[in-house]
Image 1 (cartoon, helix red, strand yellow):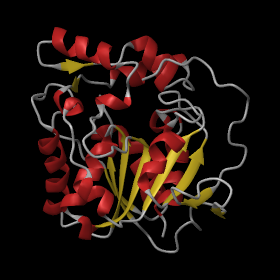
Image 2: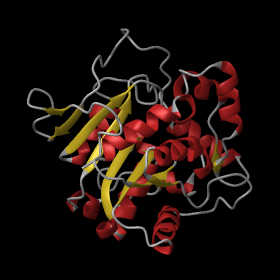
Image 3: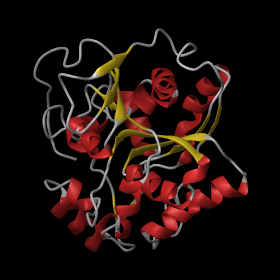
Image 4: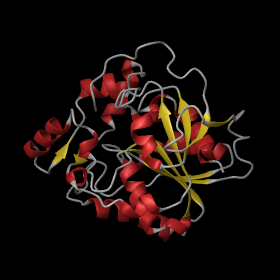
Length: 284
């Protein structure tokens, strides 16, 4: 949630690429794999489980799901426990994670691509620890990748004090995204009416799970294939050394990098393009 108001330059990533990257081999020796179109990105149909980020619920994925289904794939958008309007907010991170595990197991989903957005990077990291045999690939879309013992709150040092104060002042230990931050940082590529309509869909975010230190040893020991998708105009962690890539992405070990135009909230501003990028990121 760092408040940045502009991007220096006009085209930070002039060519969309897919890359398989190692921690020690991040720039000069990238292996670049070009993909012509979303249909050719995968010879087979895939199943996607899409996990939303903070202040959202699963309903926001509907246009993305429709696009994926149009292209012959199957997709689900569950709501994480404690998220949405008029629901109990006193949840732990483990309970939030378990709600997604239960959704998957209850439907006997296997061999699927598990996508997490923003805060949900912490959720999918813990989900795959519990059911690694069911997950085909992880896709972190501008998502947190924690080191062992870190909290999600630590990823936002410039905003942590504000979030703690908002939670303390609330009646249910929650925080919300101020509208100005939403407009200028999260959905900075949206038209005014869309920005407002999308903002009206947000709900208060449970603060407790953000402040929990997470044991990430098992996650970092897994060999589940993973990808990192980032938008070139995502100002939540602005492009640069402290941006989503490489700050978060390089923590994944070997991973595929996928880039697209757009803000942190491309799910509202470009859901079709986002769905197409999920296919690119999720393919074998």
